[in-house]
Length: 111
Length: 113
Image 1: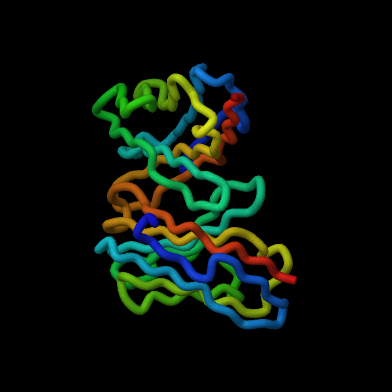
Image 2: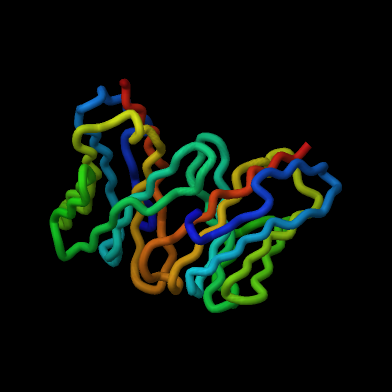
């Protein structure tokens, strides 16, 4: 019940295309859903986050779509650029508890 | 820099050595975390400290010993490690445990020979 399942493991997208990474969770007590971006040799960095009272959050080219009834959320990267090539982690947490991370998606944007 | 500084960035140690990893944050956060990241594996939570008190030890072998002298500093003391302990060790902090996102450092790349 504590798991966050992330797919796909790896993703290749053409420059200018839309990158979509999906995550699913079981614990309905989760109330915070962040996405992290990690470049080689660096630690993960918070990219965007959503709480379950909204169905979508957009920041620039990055959008989180959240489906509370399906217990799923996804990251969409519009107009994907080679600089977006990185590993992306979805995550979830509930109040007063640690963040649970997905296993990560390696995204490669073809120039 | 993210506000969380880890030193050293790279470390090579023999199996009989004793070394320490250091993490420092000046974000005013009160929770700090150690994670292990191995190649092609998910992030593994090792230890959690909240207001200097250890609140979680995720079944980590005793050859890893954490220390949190204050809310700004976190150490990971290493002794008699195994080659399979080679990994990227990441420190993170958050305002308090269970609130908001984490800020990660750039990690220490550890190689055990």
